[in-house]
Length: 274
Image (cartoon, rainbow, N blue to C red; front, top):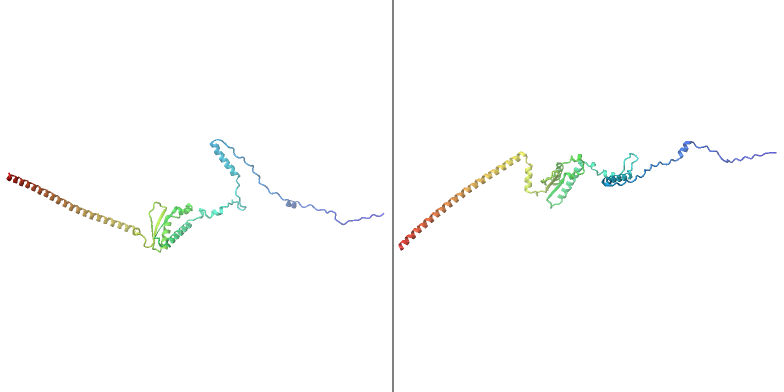
């Protein structure tokens, strides 16, 4: 009796070893942690009375502010990003300096004088400027570096350059210390009194005092001469009054004599007729 064994070479199932634990941990995807949700806060209760109304408004404001989302933060430095921060940085007062304001003021004065120069029919320009308006965008430290004397010097400097030392610039009197008005005349158009005041202003104090003393002395001489003439006129007037009075008295006396003579002559005629 014979037994035959038949063997099949096909692999029915292969044993696969289990992967290590590290690979299993890498393959598992962890779900993203979600932030804990805040429980909605109940709106504040209304309270009666004025105090209750005020407290209710404050509570409602705090409730609305708690709901508003916080601004987004950058991943690197954690600073809040806003849409207007970049645009407002260039125009903030802290970015301006006194030098930039002075340069802008000089440019404005120059353009104004060039426009005045291009108009031959215009002979007078009154340029008004204010220190507070010029330094409005500066902080306290930079504002202290810009003074009225600086602005006045810039105006006179531009007048000399554009007018080629032929224009006349005079500061007009004003009521405010931080505001000036400069009158600018073209060549040959300044009034005589303006030139006279400018010449007086250019003199030193000693010469100005001497000129004032001479002027006072001349005024005294003129007054003395006027008094002498007035005295002489009064004397002549008194003489004429005395002569006229004497003539009047003499004429009155002569008239009385004539009247008496006529009366005496009339009586004699009446006696002869009688």
